[in-house]
Length: 269
Image 1 (cartoon, rainbow, N blue to C red):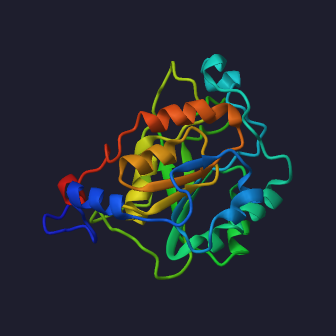
Image 2 (cartoon, rainbow, N blue to C red):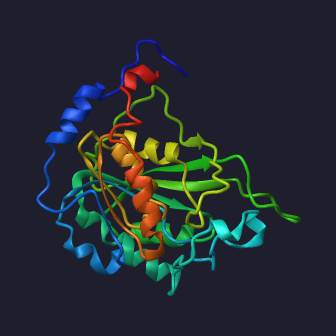
Image 3 (tube, rainbow, N blue to C red):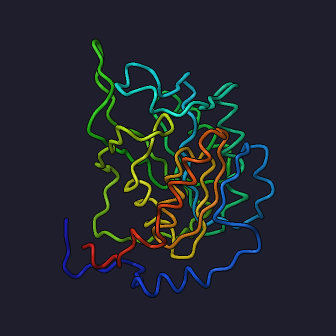
């Protein structure tokens, strides 16, 4: 649905966004990936310092990304994917309990989940001070072939806030809670088992942050959150357990120009 009179709640020209990004200042290191366990080492991030968190945690289903049913070359999947080694309920409570302390009062979080362990994540959220604003469905174009059940071709995205006064930039007149965004194919690219589309992560960043803001990803994977943040005049901070991903993430970030994905929101309508 379009509306010629609609204007985004907040909007910045490319020049304005770059200026805000350049002037933003933090009293701790940002634009950095820590190859450490977020649960154990998140305590060195100051209280109330993160604007938006984007988290795509491990599946908890003995997944490596090399399985034949995913119809990909196993040689293109980087080894070292670290799966959850405890009950998923416990794991979810441990990492989700850290989020509220880190978020600014107007901050928000996006948690991605398949359906297998969605209940664990919802229960963990219930035990925190976070508010569930939306339960979004990401519909993509394919799923794993099945014989005796329906093919799963969607993912869950939980949009959470620390307070009722959360920042939200309404950049579309009629934003739906079902997002149809295709998965992207990179057949010859060495990567982690799964990779979120750049445009999907960008959508989360656009709605929940301003230029110069700080985006945290507790499970950095391929570095998509970092590259999306950098390309939209945001700063990033991340954690990743798989040290084999270090060169891949560094290359992805280094090949991304600051602000390369940014355009004034009103120009997209």
